[in-house]
Length: 137
Image (cartoon, rainbow, N blue to C red; front, side, top):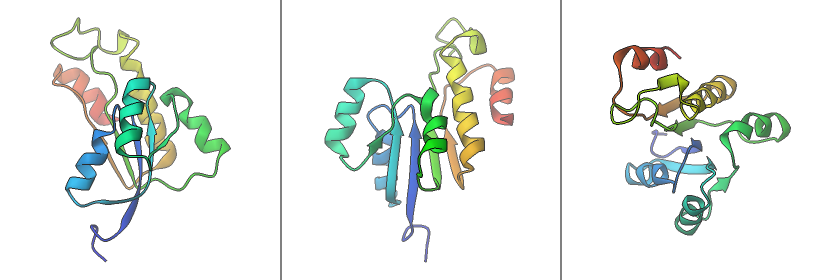
């Protein structure tokens, strides 16, 4: 069975309107279960309209609790793009001092807890020293 015939369980953090699902569909990756963490109600509305099979689990800061309290399937793929304003050259470059940047550690915490076979973290171009810290985790 090739990787394209297999069906994957996907967790999307900071999922917005679930464009990651569009990307997975376009490259032919079959999704069995897709769970998404997002708090923006308008983004969730768009995601639900376009992908009604996605199970929305709410705030990323509460996701760890979901996995300890519920019997969710093992995630094969974890995708996320934590808020990047603190790292962006276009912003004030507060880096980890920007409260939004600390949400990156929620991604790390869940990656370590769930141990997905594949993971992808998307972010912006930033100072090399901060990129190196993120890459190590």
